[in-house]
Length: 386
Image (cartoon, rainbow, N blue to C red):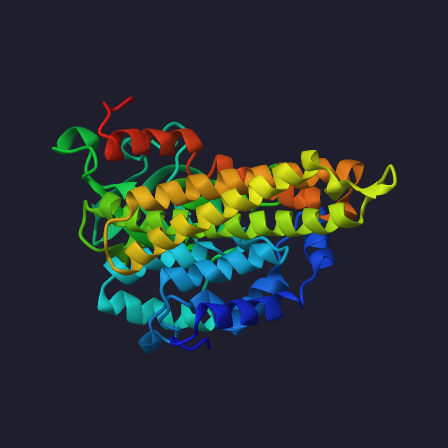
């Protein structure tokens, strides 16, 4: 188990050493088979990295979001894809900050040991997208239980998780004073729910990213699985979303550094017309620009993580970090693919795989346009546009 006194450099070295056991060929094969990197996630779990944010009293390392972001960054920088396991990191915040002592004692030790996985969070719905206050999935109190009905979409890692965080409306929208009220958070035990009110339909997609559509039909959830106060779930989920966006930013920074390092090495070695193509400014400048943007995004990542760990408001910083890092990794990916030429499209170079993976973050977990709208309204004070 990692020590709570580990420095960032020590974390980087340790995670890189673990990742060396899983070279490009491993992730290439997983991608080709549209599989799940089970062995890799198992190794991370056994080394204690996925329990980094769990307090020591529950068997974790007691590290902060900043340290967790370093772990995610190094996975992507080493050629992997932290999207297979990052859910446990940001879902943890909802349970840690808003769960009861009883709930923490019930779940956290087994999550820390790897006996349970908390990899999934169900918020998005087909007809609402990111307009979360309009969700239609309901949870109704009945005979000491909550009965859930509705539908969710783009819910990741359900097939590789034991527990799932669920946001449902417990008070009709028409009956609340503020539209952000009346939603509640639940922990769903997927092992008990599947086939007993919950059905799952996988969604094949461009990236090897296990994601699904969920259908709830009178799913019974124990009353004690309600996290925090009834009706305050939207406020609770925002904490998790800020952590999620900060971690995604770190992963994009890892991707960006992978692309810059890979293309820099290639253009030094690739000789055309009797000289390395990296000697040409037309090649140098896009790579240098990508490097600059990745480093700038890294600074905003740390600002967001530091505020989160200090329990300070960080919505703007988390959103801006995600925006800058996703943009930087995408531009770095473009440069890497462009200067590899035809070889960039060949599976064996891994550029096309990483290119597809990092493209996702222009859209998810929040699109770039919605981040711009958030900053315009909440930071600059401009009129709400929707």
